[in-house]
Picture 1 (cartoon, rainbow, N blue to C red):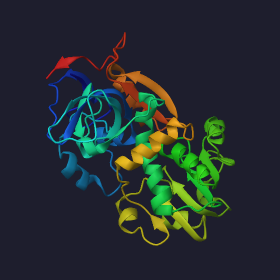
Picture 2: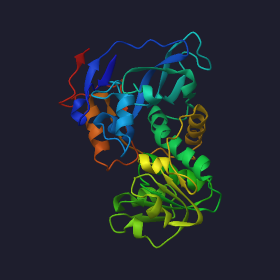
Picture 3: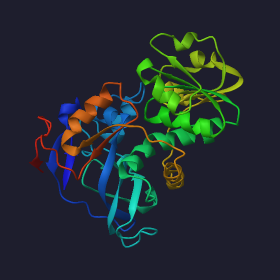
Length: 331
C-alpha cells in the first residue's frame, strides 16, 4: 500500500510517500480501505515534535524519544471495510465506516487496520470527505459542550478559534443547543462563522480578547490563548472556561470552573455526529481536499495556523504532479 511516511521529527518535508506492506487485521480489528483522511493539528504537532508546554517529555516517551514510533500519521478516516478479524463484530465487508485510530494512528495510507469498536457506519447521505472531516473536531466539540460545559439553552458562549476544525463544530453544536454564540476569528473568516450560526463575530486582529469587556456563560478556547486568570475574567459568576489546547500546568490545575484534558474518541459520538451531518444539522467545513502525494502541502497548510476547518487527503487518488519532496519509495 502507499502511505505518507515519516521516520524523523521535523518540518513537513520529512514526510514522503512510500510503499509499505498491507496491514493485517487482528482478531478484534477491521481492515479499511481509506477513502479520505483528515490532516489535523495533532498530526502537525506529532510530526514536528511541537507538543504543548510541559508535555514534551511525556509525549516523547509515548511516541518516540528520538524518532517517531508511529511512522504513518493520521487518526480520523473514512473508507470501505475490506477485511474483518475473527472476533470483530458489528461490521460487514463493503460497509462504509468512519472512525479514529487513537494513538495507533496510520490513517494517512491506502489501508488501515483498526479496532472494530472504533468505527461507526457512515450514512449514505454523507461523503467520505465529510465523514473524515467531522470526527476530530466534532468529537472534541461534542465532549467539551455536552460533557464538560453542559451548556443549557440560552447560554452565552464565546468560541475562540471559531473557524478551525474544533471551533467550527463548537459554534454549530452550541447554536443547535439553543445557545447565543460569539465567535472569534480573523475578519476574512467572519462570514463563514456567521454562516455557521454565530450571532456576533470578533476580529482578533483588532480586539485583544484578554481585555474584552464582556462576560459569557461558557468560554471555549480552541486556540490556546487563554489561561485560568485571563479566561476567568471573561466569565459570568457561574461560568465555565474550557481550554481545548491546554498545556500541562493548565491541565493538571483544571478544576471548578476550568475544564481541560483530552477528549475521548467514542463510537457513539461518531455515530451521533455522522447522523447530524446526514440530516443537514451539522456542516463540515473543508478548506482543501488533496491527494496523498500532496501530503507535504497539507502539513504546510496546517502548520501555517491559517487553516480553515479541515484539510483532507484521499489516499486512493493519484496526483498528476506529486509534491517535490514526496517521492515514492519502497520500504
